[in-house]
Length: 194
Image (tube, rainbow, N blue to C red; front, side, top):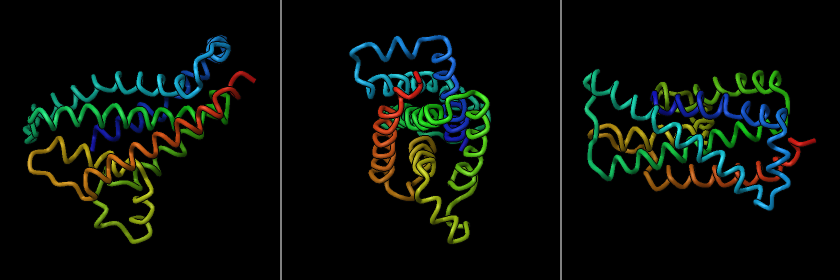
């Protein structure tokens, strides 16, 4: 699904490069001397990516209208789409920040980001349903958070669509993965200054 791919390519693949630029400009060092908890710094960066992604979601809705896609316009569905968009962008941007904290250079970051982007896309239900995947790829897709992001977005956005995994399960995986990545990144974030 297009919106899920936007999260992964836009938020995850390129968001971490911003923090590398911030390190080169001395901004990260200023953040690190503040008493702000590292997890709050990471979460703030993730939520900022989520807020920027909302405009992309609005464009996807507009394109869907032009193409005649039957959308679910109930207020509850729209609120859930907004929540999933923000959470997914936070998840993938935090993943991007983890990579940036490890590799520390723009060149390495772009290489590693590209290597990870395509496998995450193809090992999810963003392009084709998991039911037609080979058994080994279906197993891999169940460990891929993009699979649950796409499932939730498809369920809330499309009229008459049903969740393959259950919306509670989708939310749980997205929240748990985001929490784990925020905690990992909070530990790694000070390494950027070195």
